[in-house]
Amino acid sequence: MRRLMRSFDCHETERMDRAQPVSEELANTLRELEGMNRRFGGHRYVRRFLEQRLRPGHTYRVLDLATGGGDFPRVMVDWARERRVHLVIDAVDANEAIVELAREFGEEYPEIRFQVGDALRFRSSHFYDLVHCSLTMHHFTTEEAVGFLGQCRNLSKEFVLITDLRRSLLARLGVHLVNVLGGHEQMTRKDGDTSARRALSGVPTPGEGRGMGEVWTRAVSIFSASLVVAERQ
Ligand SMILES: C[S@@+](CC[C@H](N)C(=O)[O-])C[C@H]1O[C@@H](n2cnc3c(N)ncnc32)[C@H](O)[C@@H]1O
Image 1 (cartoon, rainbow, N blue to C red):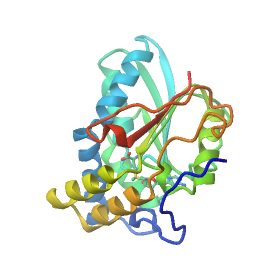
Image 2: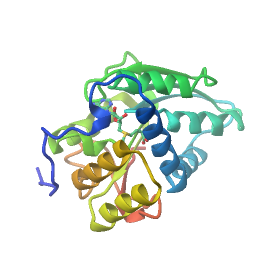
Image 3: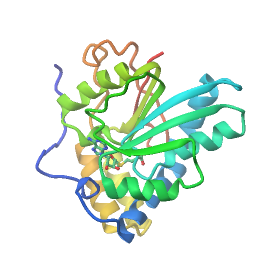
């Protein structure tokens, strides 16, 4: 396996990954992440992805792994409702407090079912039309990240969309500045710095993605060179 250079210490956990009660800081951190996904192109990219692939009048099952505050599933449903596309979404996160907050944020979205679960071990009795995961690959060891691509492929019968920070000096500086200038919570700042340091330097090659099909990178945002997209069709 090709080694992707990154600074990853498995004993250093991001604050969001720690077991914790629901708190104002955690809720704000999730809102801040959502704001960044909105401002820096993550949401726009997903809407465009759906626009190009889903057809009005159809029902699609979607899995959002490591959903955080659930903003991506909500964006998908907002997009779908306007186009007579019916989505049934399972949104999974390992952190119980985060899932509780995501349920609160998603109260008006009966299309989304939130559940606590480990993305690396998630199993389902059926396949999904789209498996999505955003800003989470860098939480995994490189071996786990590679296995995770195969896991997403196995869960999907059609599309897999994974986005993440890509390791670069620009991403490190950019993430740091956005958090400091935005006056973001300590948790957002610390996790932002850790994330940028841990980010993979590229998407694992198709071979490493275990039969992933075509895997390639695409620009997503102003950190365009810094986000990775893997997609299977
Ligand atoms: C940086 S947040 C990203 C949240 C959301 N996907 C987004 O793009 O804003 C990373 C999320 O991954 C979750 N997470 C980390 N490891 C996980 C795992 N093994 N299984 C499920 N969720 C995990 C954390 O709890 C956190 O909510």
